[in-house]
Image (tube, rainbow, N blue to C red):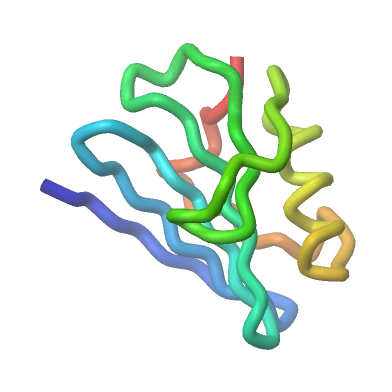
Length: 92
């Protein structure tokens, strides 16, 4: 089962989804992607990947640091990333 929510702003599209195993927030811009993932229980460190199924690049405790890395991968500023409401509580 997958629940999803989307948002877009500043040329960046965001898709939040919950799978059986993870909560994923994937940002897309100009053919590039960055995904912030957390276990479905919502208590583990956040993983940043170059897409929903990509290899883990780094882990972070804080959502703000994970968003900073995702913004860097897309070449945008953190305030340019639209965060769907369902993803606002990611992080420890």
